[in-house]
Each structure stands twice: as C-alpha cells, then as structure tokens.
Image 1 (cartoon, helix red, strand yellow):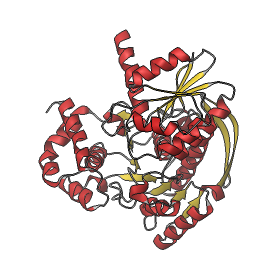
Image 2 (cartoon, rainbow, N blue to C red):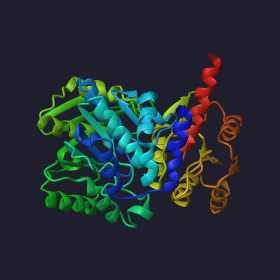
Image 3 (cartoon, one colour):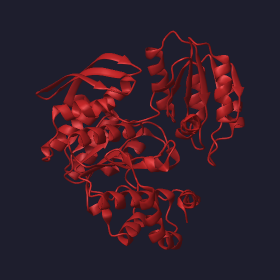
Length: 429
C-alpha cells in the first residue's frame, strides 16, 4: 500500500467503532514490543482544554531542552498532526512501515482506529527515544486506550457534558471516568473548580495515594491583557511569582489552561526535571495549536474555533463578546453525530446575527436537515448550505468589512475549511 492507501486503511478501522477497555490495547502493544514502557509521560484527560494543555506542556518542555512527544486527537488537516516529536509531525515512512508490520494482527483481532493510533504513537515515541511524551486521552480515561501508561503526573482539565452515551449522564459519572487516569503515587493536577467534581477527584486520589492538587487552591493569577494575539497574565504560585507571562492563544480560558500547565511544570520539577522560567515564558509564547479562536483573515475578520460541545460553545461566545463586543457576527456551524447540537444551537442563536448551517464531508457528519429542524425553534435568521466551501463564500458575500465570521461546531468543519485554504495557497505558489 502507498501512503494514501495506508491512510484509507487506518480510517477504515472506524468501522469497528469504539471499544472501551484495556484488553485490546494491551494485546496490541504486547505484539509491537510494549513501547509504552520505554518512555516517560504526562497523562492528560478532561472534556475541554486537554489538547491545549498538552500542547502547552510540550512547547515548554521542548524549550527546556527535552525531546518531547505529543499525542492528541483528532487532527485538523493532516493525520500526522496527531503524533509529533519536538513539534515535528510523524514521518509518512514510519506510518507505512508500522501498518505493514502490524496489518495482519489488526485484521485478525479487529483493533479499532484509536487503538491502532495509540500503538502507532507509542511505537514512534519509543523509536525516537523521547524524554517525555504528553499523552491526551481519546475518550474518558478509565477505559481509554492511553490508560496503559504510568505517567510522571496526571492532569485533569474541565469536566462538562460530552460523549454521555459512553461516559455517563451526570457530571459526577463523567468525572469518575476521567479520574480513571489517576495512578498510585502519581500527583494529579485538577483544573475544574466545581465543589462536587473536586470531591470525586479528591476521593480517587485518596484511594490511590496520589497527591491531589486543585488549581484553585494552589495558585492565583491576574489577566492584564487579552486580544486575538493572546493574553498577558501574572501568576502567583506558592513562593514563585511569574510576571507578565504571554500566551499566544486567544481567550481567557486559555489563560486557565496555561496556569494549569505551569502548575504541572512545578510538579514535574519536583520529579527531577529541569524547567526554567525562561523555558516557561518562551514555551507559552510559541505554542503551535491551530483552530482555537484563530484568526484566519482580518478583513473581514474570520475566526475559526473547534468548540464541539455545549460548554465549548458557551466559552466561545463568552470570548467573542469580550474580544469583539461591537461586531455583527455570522456563524458557520456544523457538527458530527452524537453531539448535543440543540444546546449548542440555543447558545449560538442567542448571540449570532445570522447562522449558516453546514455539513463536513465526513461519514459521521450530522445531516444538515436535522440542524435546520432544530434552529427553527429559535428566533434567528439562518441559511442552509451543505458544502462548507459554499457556506464560507456565502458568508463572505453577506458580511461587511467591519463585521465578523466565526466557523465552529467541530474539528471536521474547521479542518475542512483550513484544508481549502491550504489548497488555495499551494495553487498560488
């Protein structure tokens, strides 16, 4: 198989669905030589923010001089975005070789898309001899394929409703599943500040003799400036004060992600890793993490954001109100199956001046007709344009130069638009 055929084969494994549990991944990793035992890691779970925290930690530790690995999902444009070493995407040749060597075993045992991705990432990190890999869970924590690692520390970000069919119908059930990454004797940093959720994590940490570190109790921070180019904030952590830290991701929620990352660095340092203040400053200011309140175009202002659940959409709207309070807003919105689109549309309908409903060209995309049926319940002007490129062109025809467009609802919607932009750039070269 060539590279494109290999990718098609990997994506074809989605037909086996999601299999929560560690039996399959343990078997696959054993077959490829248990690569997860050959590198150190930081394990990151949560509903929203875990990818950003993983990316921030990777950037800081890379600046500190370590060979870093980063495993996140999903990707936006290129499958290789999911697995990186020191910011560089996994080589195509490694993917080809891995699949060629493991294909018979995959076919025999019907390993899932994410199980194979996890084994691929861990094998790559082992071969590249990374010092420390940031590993983001795919779904939940307790039964997630990544939960075979024994990390230096665990980090749990915000908890909200998503994947409720797998993780539970209440926040406490979801928290309990995410808290499954808590390991014996491994410090656990918790971002969420809700009392009942903190109780769940504190109890799990107590059971595992894990140091419980809630962010709200461990540090204080002040945001001095927040724009689309990022935020400036000061952080007071124990006896250490970091003044005027600059993060190059927009939105005040990213400051909380950054604070969590710096707190994680403090715990990593206690394990013997050397992370200077300079590495923290440079790392936060150099993060390469696309699709998060990212400005794609300035006139008219076009913003892309991968918010894909009700809480993510609320945070997006809150951020846009603060960053551009006076602009009229056209929203381009599409989702994949299984998402709580009624709540997402309710929030967007209360904010947007106009909504364009669309649909990514992905086999799990939600039919745009279902979005239209839902949006009719709200008093908002809308249009239905199935193809994302056409939806974007229509939005440009409707927007004035002083107003804005925001594309959101799914990694697949944002990723498809980014791919269109990249193809146009290639043609101009």
